[in-house]
Length: 151
Image 1 (cartoon, rainbow, N blue to C red):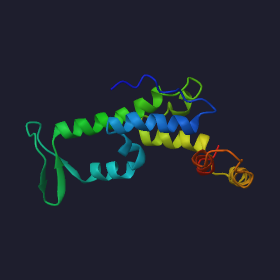
Image 2 (cartoon, helix red, strand yellow; image 1 turned 120 degrees about the horizontal axis):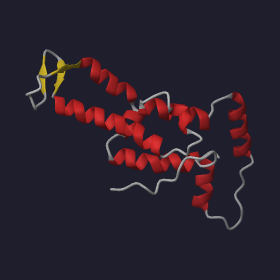
Image 3 (cartoon, rainbow, N blue to C red; image 1 turned 60 degrees about the horizontal axis):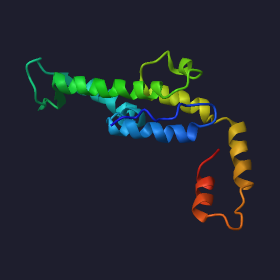
Image 4 (cartoon, one colour; image 1 turned 90 degrees about the horizontal axis):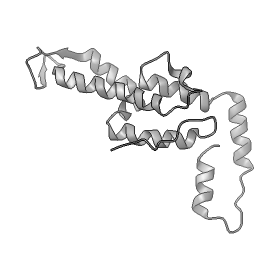
């Protein structure tokens, strides 16, 4: 499955971009690292490595034991979460996340940049919400999508 048609992130398309990037992340099994980064780190803390010849998972003494193949696959998917996000950025935004290689951290940096939670942003969103009007002849489904998603 090729994802070359993802729109690059610009200053004006955050909402569209995050939906388009979520699809390949889900396809490659890497969205879990963006969505729940704490789960993966707790897995790393509780695991015990198996010798390099072992190929199966076992449970021993209450700790999860994973093979080197599973660990490699986990690392590969975690790295893929970062690379897919990085490749879908326009050059002007790449420096924002160039200091990290963690996909979840990169996503949070971009989200904080494009969806700030300052008081001014909250007031702006409230103002937009209360100024939203349903126009006669407008499709109800489109109007509801406009109400649900902030601009």
